[in-house]
Image (cartoon, rainbow, N blue to C red; front, side, top):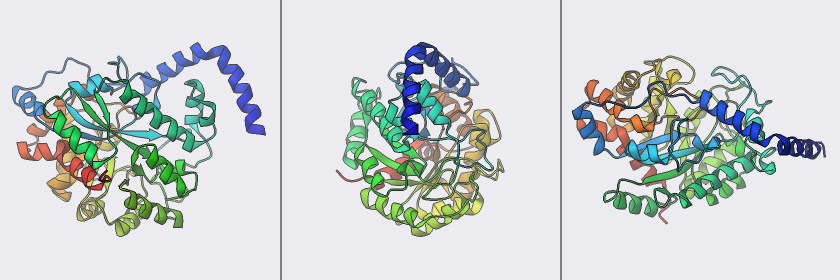
Length: 389
């Protein structure tokens, strides 16, 4: 009863202050997702030529969290459909964030606060999303589906292996299109119920991350209080996901969760967006042993673009982290995971990805190696995991 009284009060407040809330939410989004180096980007001739022929896949971005029309080229944020096309991105994994703690940090967070609830209020999400994490996930999934429907064929929602194969074949003739795969950041959105995996699957989710910034009923977070491993529910989730053709994502997971999932997994998995301790030593990033373990699984590590992942603020820092990951895990097990629009500062937006191509060339990678890093590795894993039809 109490929550519905609160809801009623909030509805009245929102009705009277909708415009002001939209403006404030828009300002927050712009402030939290800056681009450090703005256009025009000036690539080398070699970089531009190579970049135009790459098949690029980004394993993680969070634009669905914000009230923006992703079919329009934005003046804020880091990713939208026009800029994805400009950046020659073939496949973008759109991640869904459902809850973050107040004073979020990489060391220790509990689950007692909920900043996304405040954002849902401010952006006037449907009332059912105000108190349900699963409802938020399903709402953001609908946002992606509606964006794809309204894109005039420029954004294609990928749900099956056949979808992906058809899209990639069509994109060879028309690069003015982007594939979209839907992911969840943190299984707290399951709300403790294994059947929620099926609901999310039906809504189009094909990748689920075990944890975000706090421990949940499924597993421990690298940034949680207990930082434990898989629970009984968590082990059941791993099996259910593999049965359905959903990719396991270990980004933000505790060390114990990482080792326990890798011990169970029968299919290649991903760490969608991360750094490596070898170039940036903090709790957010992977150790050498974890890199090797993902490689043994056949999986892919997506190197992020933000400073906590790379200990730098430019494309050179990203390329340096990629080089380290390749040295430890091998060239077949490293990809890209930007974390665009995930409340991080990015050295360039997605239209400027050629800056990273230039940095990878400068780091000494061959054309074939850059093709694998840019997207071939990630697409191999995602394609292999997706349900056939």
